[in-house]
Picture (tube, rainbow over the protein chains, first blue to last red):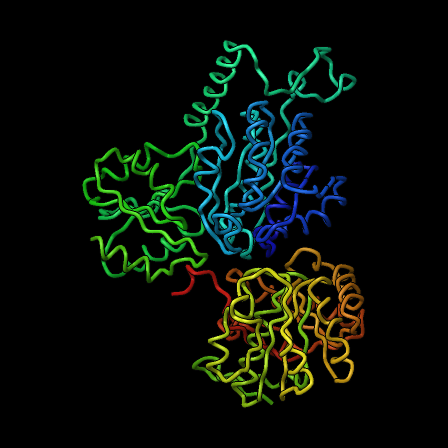
Length: 355
Length: 241
């Protein structure tokens, strides 16, 4: 298929359709409202439904209801909206319903601003809602990857029977890039007759399915949490994604960065290379499960003296990086969180400052 | 006639862009209105015209004319924007200065509207001022974008824009591109497509666009309309060096 020029938000909407998602519920918020604008035009053409909730709280539970039937369903929002949905996300994770949440992150805290940020790393990876749950979190660095990850997200949500989150900063939603939609990423839904409340008339089994998050018996609840934990451990074994950049050199500094910030770092790395300074980057594509072993291995290469995490936050992913490096190398941090993305020149200065 | 030195081998674009007075740039969301507006302003100023440009994009939160204010002002283009403290707001702010620039237009006054029908609603609010003036409303089309890859799609957007703005579109611009992945074939296909839209609507093609880096590769004899060279200004931060 020929490439088309799409805004990240539109491309996420189209990717959901290509992945077989026919249910999209949302509430508008900058900088992701174009997903809804796109899907309100496109979904009816595909026999799908877009419903705008009266708030993000309502949307969260609309997603829960639809996901409970086993239908492919997605919502998109931005930071404050995801905060409002977080209670529902906890319920959905507990009730083990597959669905896709997209957070096109803006600056916080509070209303913050409408410009790009990565300040929702903790919220996404450590649980914005309550209880022992984890989200599988995918972090694209551009529009093409946003397409591919959105399509993968539906497959992963069904594999692990739970919510999957796409975490993209505001630029991911707003920038335009040429994209294509890989047909091989569209998968057939997994049979869900054993758990989904999809109607007795359509399935062979006459077992009564119940979608719930309430377990009053302590032993039952502990076993339930152990089963959830086993899924999160499986994610760590089977679905870690990362990109290693310039790691086949004798680099002195290892950058950890993700999303659009990593693209600025890449430009800086290329520019430093021309000056004879080798710097590598380890870019997590899944923020949970986190590429722990890859970061440890890259950080402890003989030539590597320092690790620096560069983020559009005040220091969030860096805590996971420090955990992975296990004190073997100093871990530095640079971040901005007002909405301006540091320039390649700024990153070059920072790297030169720590060499 | 405009003579433009694009490269070392001097090329001449023999057809001049005939845009003056009040020019309103509209089109579907993401069709490239703002890059077109910025480059039309810059090139017109560089050939000596007195140029004003207003950012009327009330629907797009990023990548707006306001982000290249310094570049345009250095060239001597007057840029009319919302008050500075609202520069990064997603609020529909229409500064009163826009009405003023319509009442007293410069040689070329460009109004960069927002995308789709919602983006031009603001023009209806300026209707009292615009109705007293002669203005051109040009529809920018990138056939490599969703919803405008067919003639029907372009006509639908045209009608929606006309209904919402209470103005009639007077001309067409082809802005066929895939940003850095654009090939000459995309420009030729875009030119063929805009001719079909022109034949269907009866609207003239005001000009087509092409990246200034690509212009040396293009066979200009294939175009029966002016070509506006585009130097992309709204780039993501990693492309800033």
